Image 1 (tube, rainbow, N blue to C red):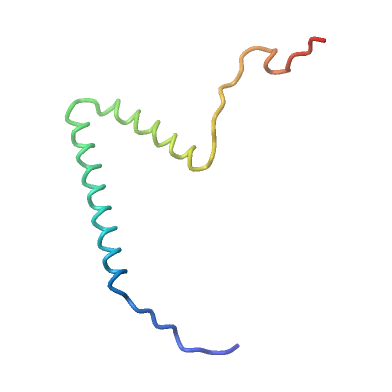
Image 2: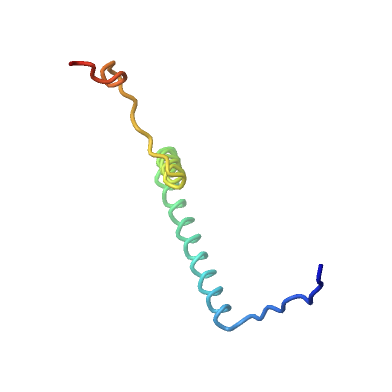
Length: 85
């Protein structure tokens, strides 16, 4: 196996600017999320907010993995098909 010297990585000004903009964007999103949680909790809708949040979380997970739940049919014709000739 050949040995080589470690590759030198150079930090460019564009990279620093991109990092700073992404960090500021994440901080503003975090502040907005905290503000929404504070407002939701002060209105007395904490339990309702958790239910909606869990539903949206479940929906986000389903969307991420590509799962699209279908309601189960209750009648026999939909389970076994239509056998009329």
